[in-house]
Structures are given as C-alpha cells and as structure tokens.
Amino acid sequence: MGMSVTISAAAAEDAEQIFKLQYLAFQSEAELYGNYLIQPLTQSLDSLKSELETDTVLVARLGDEVVGTVRGNVDEDGTGRIAKLCVHPRLQGHGLGARLLRAVEAALTGDGETSRFRLHTGHKSEANLRLYRKAGYTRVGDRTASDGVHLVILEKDASDFAVSA
Image 1 (cartoon, rainbow, N blue to C red):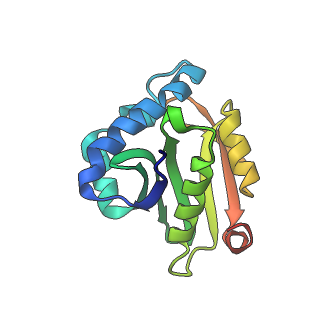
Image 2: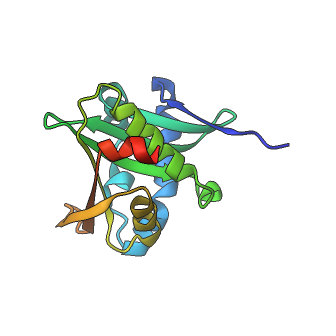
C-alpha cells in the first residue's frame, strides 16, 4: 500500500510546491514564537526561485507530492550553510528530516571543499535542536534574526559527515 519517499535535486517546476510546503511547515514555528513574520513565511516565490538557481535544493517526494525540502550552499570559506529544512506536518517524526539533512550534507561535500556545516534554528525549537544534536551538531553561538527570533547557531565538522553518514 505505501509508497516510499525519495530524495532528489529540486527542479524549477518544484518551486510552487516547495513554497506552499515551506509556508505550511513553518506555521508551527511561527506559533511557537508568536511571530508570523519569520523569514520562511515572508519569503517571496521569486526569491525561492532564485535560490533554486543558485543553491543546492533537495526535495523529498511521496509520489508526485513534495513532502520535504532543504537548501544549502558552500561559502568562500568552505562552510556548508544549510537552511529551511522542513517536512510536511503529517510526515514529521518519522526520520525524514534526518534523511534530508544527511542528503544535503552529502551534496555539499561533493566537491571536497567543504570544511564544516553550519545551520541555525530558534532557541525554543526543541525538536529541531534534538535532530541537529543527534546528527552531530554543536552550539557555537547565538544571534537575533531580523524578525526578532533568538537563533541558536550550530556547526559540525564536515569530516564528521563520513562517520555519521
């Protein structure tokens, strides 16, 4: 009866599904912080389309439906920056977020230039913090986003990827 979820590179035609999923999946974060102006909810479709052209964007599909997504890029210092990991609410808690995280780490280490991974999440987002700690990330700092949310910055040495993959 069940279909399996596959992870692959996003295509330009996935933009609207990613946009809608992101809006749906980040509602719980907005509620947690009492702030519906967080960046994933205010990002424009055009901005997301630009990210599809420049960043590594992966999607998880269940049949034709995009049920998860994550983005990343490698900066000039060799830091793989991972962002906007989200999973459809009905599929959360089944390991799909961890699979997407491992997949984007693998994609970002493909050229061998990535020395570390960096990501952030809100300080109240316990499920996210648990996921990242379990994946080997450690807290390296904090900052307040332009939307006022206090963020925890986490990093992991890219050489640890081979051990945890």
